[in-house]
Length: 81
Image 1 (tube, rainbow, N blue to C red):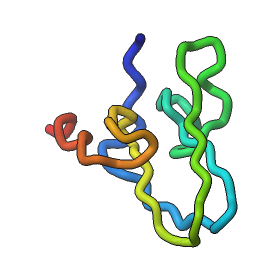
Image 2 (image 1 turned 135 degrees about the horizontal axis):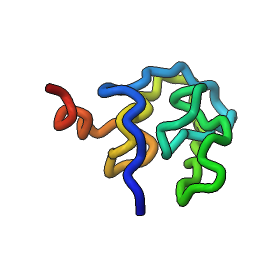
Image 3 (image 1 turned 90 degrees about the vertical axis):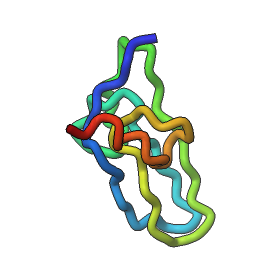
């Protein structure tokens, strides 16, 4: 599988709303980071569905290399210079 594009080397803090569905961009190509805008079409990537169970702040992964999609797990630290 190809490597995703690093959108940013840090998380995206997002205020999510309870009962709302969000689609996290897994390819890193979306212009609407951290969310999918369909830029993955024609690739092996697919967006990851996240359904908020409460209204809170969620930290979506920006480097797209997390081992816990769609959340930041600190993996971005290895990409910083």
